[in-house]
Amino acid sequence: MRHIPTLLRRELASYFLGPMALLVVLAFQAIALLNFWELVESLARNNVGYSGLRDPLNTYISGSPPFWIGMLVAIPALTMRLVAEERRSGTIEPLLTAPVTEVEVVVSKWLAGVGMYLVLLVPFALYLPFLYYQGHYNFDVGPVVSLGIGLSTMGMMFVAIGLFFSSLTRNQIVAAVLTFATVFMMIVLSSAGYAYATYRRAAWAEAIQFVSILHQASTFGTGQLDLRFLSLHLSVAVLMLYLTVKVLEYRREG
Image (cartoon, rainbow, N blue to C red):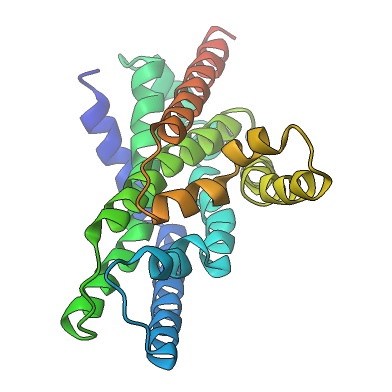
């Protein structure tokens, strides 16, 4: 694993030297500013006094449609080129014949993607101190930390999924579409399925609620750091990384 730092620098450089990452970061900066503005207006309009940041935090991020729409676009955009572009340009062959292992290649690409994902969350955290220093709201940092951890492990899972689909094809668009469809299913369809199951009082309602990303984010936003959710995210991430390594091993042998 000693080559990972070098490979990671290579992947991060390709992100920051290209226009896609900059556009995605700017888009999330705009979403964070919009969400914060709406949060402040809501608090001022309702004159809400609170000792914790539970409901406001859920409104600010967890319950924000622009945030999740941004995620649906950002995850495929950030992961589609990780392997697909290297296969298209032919640079993956020299990389795999170099004295590095498939595990090192996959982990370095995954870490770079996770790093870019975390950069997208930074603007949301930067605005929160204004609630305390300018708005004089003494909010509890517990829900902030809980949601931050939960969103981080979600990102690890999402990036691993995107990396896996990027390893299956030379076409970045195909990789992006496959990633978008999967993340859409996890974010939107799971919530719709839970609403339907609740309406029909189905026995599987609790099971689908457990895998609903929006339900998980809402739970994290109330300060409940459910270790089952974290285990689910990390387990899926490890599985996807393992499958990606196997795909690259197959490519090298082929």
